[in-house]
Length: 184
Image (cartoon, rainbow, N blue to C red; front, side):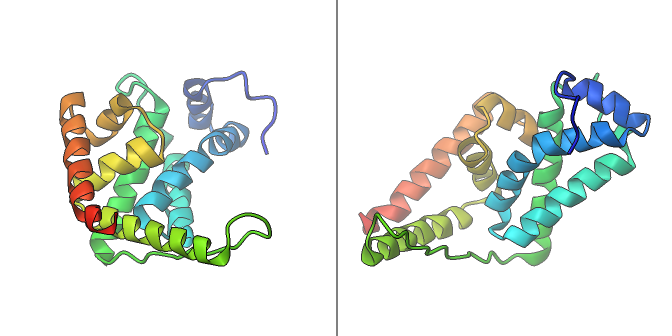
């Protein structure tokens, strides 16, 4: 793990990476791996695939750090999360099937086995409904709600106006509400 770099912003680290600094690269990876992984996982629903995508994205950055051009991008994160999202979309286009993992761990204290199964089933139903949305609506939801990005950041990542992104989110919510009302 890199130490001594927290005082440098992403832009400064990227300048150092362009000179071949492994330490600056390690700091950037440490800062952005978790969120990048969450974005990739939300798209791919596979731990291994999400890890591969994040690794590929960072590898692309290391091999050609000049791809990020600070003068053209508002923030490194906006650009990098777009790279991650595009890699995910490319992988999904190649595969065209979504494999959903069921996570049914039962805690020693807390919900009963039946409650846990019901929650897992509800989660699976929701994930399937989200996976069935059109790609752009699914992407908008993933970036805003799962990755925790602001609507403006998500719009920039997707190359849309803020109004267009908000429209995608509203259509996705309406579709999900309609598809899920039979379960309520």
